[in-house]
Length: 492
Image (tube, rainbow, N blue to C red):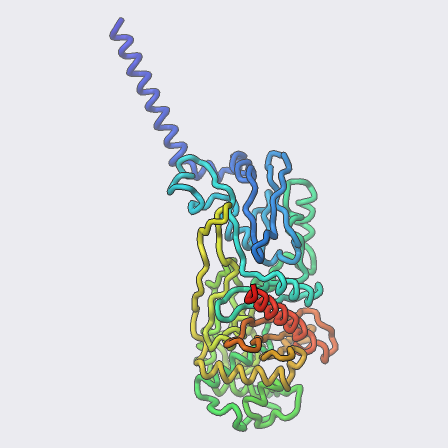
């Protein structure tokens, strides 16, 4: 009898060990596949069982969470949703996340290991920390100025602090309310279909995900390449520039919208945006130097994150001379995001240095304790500091007595460059209106804001569609808001 009891006890121990081994296998080995199994409803139930952390602008939340009492309990809410949609993105029970809601999901949802009280604590306990917060670099006043300036017209605005790379405004229009995608009701699916099929593409982040021909704003890059390579040594000396200019190897003639471009100096050509001068300069500077300078400004970089992915801006590396001439004036297949062109302006304002643009200033725990801080980082040197100083003078001339006078701010040093970019079949599409600029307040050692504005659907009237007519006033309003915000912060 004792022998049978002993055998039964050993068998029970073996069964217990088998159960423990199986439990360990499920929890440690199969946990990942079980978590991602679509049939596992526990994952979304747990994910939405607690309030999500907030995204902050000027220290105040622009997001929230609403307790619905349903199975997927907490829904995401947004304050001024359309204003901040290009920054926040959306967080949906049905369609996932985008932009900051996606890149900072670990912090916001409470799953990031840095939020745990002890290393590996959440992994061992399968617990979740309260959602942390994301402090952005956006300034509310600057964002509002950019959004109001566009007034719903298709386009985008990006504003950067040149010395640090902080993104002060990121606006895309038309926009949408991300809260329409929160929840699980039938209206969410209807909103998703409507937004994705809308002709105006409101969910497209035009500031960082859409590229445009930059037109004459690209002449800043061409001028930098010409000066750095020694193609131009004296920006005030007359050059040998015919008008019209016949593109090399073709019979196509390039003309100008203004007079006085024949044999003009670089300064005059920049101030009045002479196409013939800059097309010839691009050819004389050469493909190698043009590609090198464009890369230094950030073109052809597919790795840029802010932390959301940014569409790479393009400057072709295999061009014949005619194509190079057109690319040097921001046409052919040269394309740039508004953020990239803000980086070009910021490089001029910042002495030639290109700082890494970023949207996140700091992440914190739910209680506000710091988790991680984004530091200032230099991506590359776009041009020699002396070249940057010359370009600052030339951009100042554009605003003071050239094509960009609509961006002038009394008592403030403002530099700018207008641009009108042709596109469409045979360039018959309504041109895009561009303006890039920077502003330096009295008493400041360096400019404190750089801006890029693009408008897709400006008036078909040529006088109104120029960057100086349509885009420059928006840039002016954004720069004024940034300068006032910086002054208020200094007084605070």
